[in-house]
Length: 169
Image 1 (cartoon, rainbow, N blue to C red):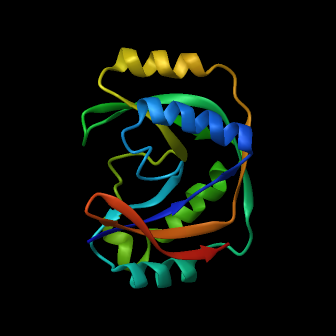
Image 2: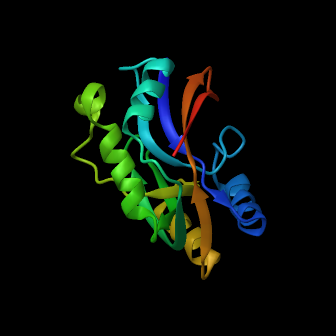
Image 3: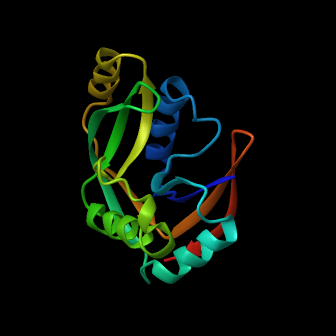
């Protein structure tokens, strides 16, 4: 079983609907998982309860606001896709701090230093770079505010993501 730690930013209804409409059209995972920021990528090192204990021991004590203003296109070398990200501007430092704190202790060996970590919400997965840039440019100007108040531990079970724990910040 592979487990993850993610944050589900609480967007305003109009922003959540806009993100959902884009994801339903361009992200094959839209029906499986809500818009999220991945903090710990798929790992077999800890079971769900072990990851939940680790998250509880390393998370910050207060919720924080994020503002997403830009998009970014990146190539995913694992799936050979081009992803469109909503990039966190404000709140990015807090997300990176969570990510870095979580990749300590039992997860220290799991940290990928060969891939930079960019705090983001994936909104599209495209087969070509041109298609990804078209999707990104179609989004236009952004100012999507959201609150991050929990880190959730998810388990991937038969291609479905199941929340096993939610740890408040």
